[in-house]
Image (tube, rainbow, N blue to C red):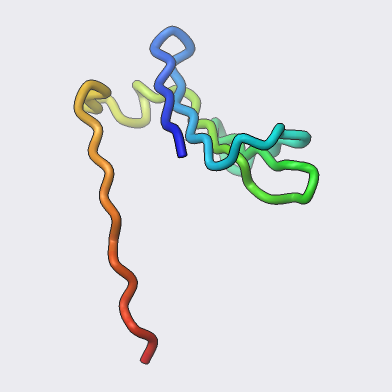
Length: 72
């Protein structure tokens, strides 16, 4: 998984898989999901990042893994 912030384009891109994207769909205004040939999500792009998260400090991003709980 890779996270890229492009300040010039004012966008954030989350790469979930290195497979080539063959289709893209805008699922919400400014949110684009990329799919591979099997229809699996390989990336997500968020446009207008500075408007969506004006206080975001891209020099300080955190990654958190939440442990799954046992099914009931």
